[in-house]
Length: 434
Image (tube, rainbow, N blue to C red):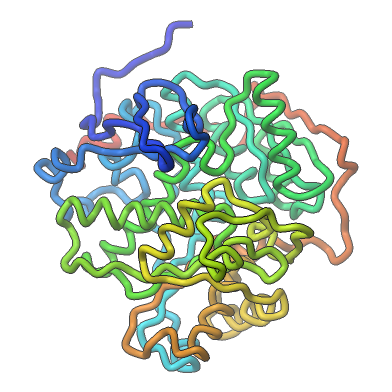
């Protein structure tokens, strides 16, 4: 069937894809994963000189809320290909009682649990699925320890794509249930996300699925970078002094740093100072922390990874060199926290501020408390924690186990489900913003 195209186009500021390792460039009109020469992640680059001439930074606040109000700085050219569930523009909340306790009057949390499917993964998967749809991709696959699976299933359903998800068998039940509800096929795998990634990669190559793994395509990071634009806008185009971010695959950390560099080139920032980026990991799986402390440029594979924060149980990120580079360039740091301190911080956030965070989000508060003890953070500094998801996604009964690891659940992709709704005409959606 001939692909439907639109005569309405966004400004073509997306100019090239660039390898983060060797610097090779690739055309964005074609399907790419990682660099074919050095196998490093590739990143989208924009014509920021042209964008600087044509975009008014203060006009974005008058557009309809959501990530796609920044469409000129996102990779989709044809707006009819956008797959959205209303992601983005999550609240930036002041932590009043925790601020008093820690002596940090300018302490905030960016609460990403307000996103569709309950986590920040919605941002990256909206961008990746939208671009995949524009490129004519119809089958998407992902290995995930949780929230990315539910997000991909939802966006694939809305895009009328087939979705195949490989989960470790100890993945929280909520992630598996929401993925099945959205019609995705599910495979449960013994082991960690790295084991799921190995099997998913083999399946993708053998059966023609497009792999949406973290940094193995260039567009998930584009959705995550919008968190950086939202922060800058919320602080009247001054950036916070410190951002504390839970780091598994590292897409958000790399994406926000990319956003800060883009905004600097666009001339949108009131001052050149950028935040110190803090990568938080769990003591039971801390490859970035170990590499950072050793002065290494890449991470070793973490053996016997274990933590209650499933999103932090990533033995080695595909973008480890990018993560380490960005932390060091920012003047930031990396530290690991115990599962006990994560649980304590999770209770504290909820009891003192009413925020039921995911364990990964609570890890940022645990890290902040350690940074305060070290006097690494000062009382006049503006600090932003990231809660990346809802604690409601982690309510498995104690000791409960997932289903048999060989079981495959296949939901028919043609049936109706709660996520596949009629989309209003996108031209009308954006017309009052132009």
